[in-house]
Structures are given as structure tokens and as C-alpha cells.
Length: 440
Ligand code: SAH
Ligand code: SF4
Ligand code: F3S
Figure 1 (cartoon, rainbow, N blue to C red):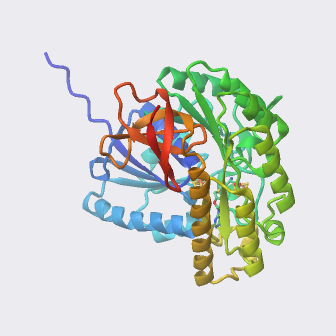
Figure 2 (cartoon, helix red, strand yellow; figure 1 turned 90 degrees about the vertical axis):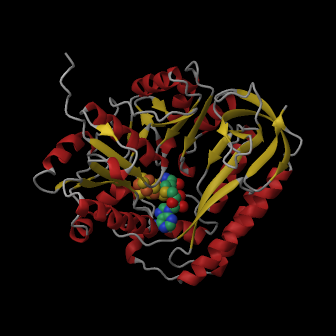
Figure 3 (tube, rainbow, N blue to C red; figure 1 turned 45 degrees about the horizontal axis):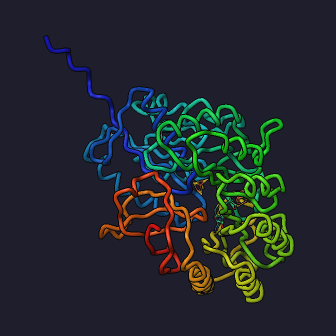
């Protein structure tokens, strides 16, 4: 006799915005929901529950989500039983405004509430459910995030941020700093290695502030490097002020820890750095760059830059361009300053016009292209071990991988070039963003 059909599991469609930490959180959310008997849907049309895991870092990020909510509200009108939920940083940042403006929402859950999602979804069948309590101890350490395949996996090692840079909403939406137990992190990394993961990226908003009892971030890097099967270890984002010698030594001496550091500077003007409460001066930052470059041969440096922070004048901005020239970053992410409610800078104002911010942003992007192109050109003829990730986006029988410095290498496919293998690659030509060549 055929088995009686169990009712179809309710399916969840999850869309993620923002940084890698949100991507990693979405994997935790997926595990929580699968454990509670939900299935996953790959399109909103096939879902019983739609969740958006949101970002609040800039106004633009929030606008994108509000627009998406507007689109999804149409689906809900056609299928009133559909549940629509908002997760993540924006849920935490804008909860009251969101509930007032988005009557289509059934639930709102902040970054420390994911354990309770099954209850919240259940409860939302009767009433809108809201849980945005921040929890000083929540780390989800016992929930192994669903790995989504591929050679690289992200592992959150600390949550929250205690730095309170004047412009930044993260400490308000993610709460206080807390580090995960190193033993459970190593268990997670071993499990990922057993699933075929070759590269681990350790994550945290100030990842190098990691500390659990006697274990600091340098020791954690060394522990991760002991895990068999893991070939490469990276991390993001460190704060310049927490970049201790122990960390620099670990990168320099552990071959598995890749020579690549994202070192967000934000501005090249001491006046702006002080107004931003970044906790370092330009001279201190440059001394750090010097220490890092002397200790770690071939290290690649990238950064984040904010243009048009309140009070930034032409001289401050010129100082940022000067700093970029002095350091010579391999890549940079740049952003127009966006005033965020709750932050310390909120009350200061927003003195730089949108037009000037736009022009400064373009100038930063153009200068960075020039610098990156020059740096990449110097690599022509060099050979790097490349971890192969799969077909190149441009197609045409080309494959792509990463060098130790996290530069994209593009080369013609070859039979032995299987996903997850590391092979020597020779650079033949470059752009500002990638290296073209062939397997050596
Ligand atoms: N924790 C990391 C960065 C987190 S946010 C660090 O301290 O470096 C990522 C980047 O977004 C920041 O480095 C900053 O450049 C940018 N950012 C943060 N708040 C912003 C704001 N209000 N306006 C514009 N850019 C912002
Ligand atoms: Fe934001 Fe500063 Fe914390 Fe980075 S260190 S997350 S910029 S407050
Ligand atoms: Fe955005 Fe939250 Fe990350 S505000 S940048 S998703 S921590």
C-alpha cells in the first residue's frame, strides 16, 4: 500500500542584502528553518513564506529593500496566506517606521532573534510578530550554518561591534561584541573541510577584535591553519586599531593564511578621522601599512573609503587621494556618506552636497582604477598558485580562480583544472580588476 502522503512542507524563500555576515546569517536562518520542518523555495512565487535579510548601512540599501517589499506586496495581495517577513539590520534599525509603512509585513526579526523564527512565523498566522531584542550572548554557536556549496565558506567568529564610529549603524543594529568558542569554530571548520571546502573566510565586523578567554585572533588563525583539508584562510573585516603583532605574525608565518588584508581607512584626513571616531591617525595607519608590508611578502591591501562625511572640505578630500597614492591599494570600496539615524554623526548634519559627494566618489574610483591597473601590470610574467573556482563569468571556455592575494585569475579550461584544485597560473595580461593568463 502506498504511504499516506505527508502534507507538503511549507517552503521559505530567503533573499539576502548587505555584507558577508548577512550572507552567513542567512545560512544560519536556513538551518533553523530546515530543522523546524520547513522546505526551501528558489523563487518567491513558489514560497509560503518570503523573508528578506536586510542591511541598514546606507540609505540606498534600505531603499532597495523597501522597493522590493512593494513588489512582493503584490504577490501577497494575490495570495493572502503568503507570509512576508523582514530580518536583519534594517529590521533592527527601522522597526517602527517599517511596521507603519509596510502593512504587508507579517513578521520582523532582528539579527539576534533567528532561533525563534519558527515560532515567529507560526505566531504571524494570527498577528504580526516582532522580535528585535538584541541579546548579548547570542552567537548561534550550536547551529551549523547550511553551506551553499563551492570551494569557499564563510564562518562567523564574532558578532557585534563596540567601536561606535560616528557614522556607523552597526553597533546599534548588531549589538555588543561577542566571540564564539574556538572549539566549536574548529568543529565547524573541520565539518566544512569534510564537505570539500578548501577556503575558509573568518567573519566579524571587527574580526580581529576576536577574543575568547586566552585565545586572540592571531591564535585563532593559527588554530584554523591546523585543520586538515583547509588550504586557505582569509578574514574580513579587521579594524586597523586591533591589528596586533600577534595577528601579523600569524599571517606571515602560517602558509595557509593568505597574504591579503582588507584594512578600511575611511579617510586620509586626520580631522575627518577624529570626527569619525576611528581611533587612529593617518600616521598611525601608514605605520601599520609599513609593518604589514615588511612582515608579509607580497601582501595585497584593500580598503573602504567614505567621501563627503559631514565637514569634509576640499583639503580633507585631497588628503584621502594622497593617502590612496601613498598606500597604493590593490582594490578599494568607496561610498558616499549617508546619514544614519541613531548614530553619533546624525546630529552633526550632512554639509557636503550630493553633487560634490558624487564628484568625489568618481575621483576616488578613477584614481583607484589607475593604481590597481599599475599594480596588476607589474605582475605580468609572474606565476601564482590559483585555487580554481569554476567557469569564468565571461564564459567562452574560460575558467576562474583566485590568487593568494585574492585577485581573480582567468584562463582557458584544461582537463586537470578541476574545481577546488590549486594549480600554478602565469599572468599574461591584466585589467584593473583581473589577471588573464594560462595554467603554467
Ligand atoms: N567593520 C568594518 C566595516 C563595516 S561597514 C570596519 O570597521 O571597517 C562597511 C563599510 O561601509 C565601512 O567600512 C564604511 O566605509 C561604509 N559605511 C559605514 N557606514 C556608512 C555610512 N553611514 N555612509 C557611508 N558609508 C558607510
Ligand atoms: Fe561600523 Fe566602525 Fe564598527 Fe566598522 S568598526 S562596524 S565602521 S562602528
Ligand atoms: Fe549591512 Fe548589517 Fe552588514 S547593516 S553591512 S548587513 S552588519
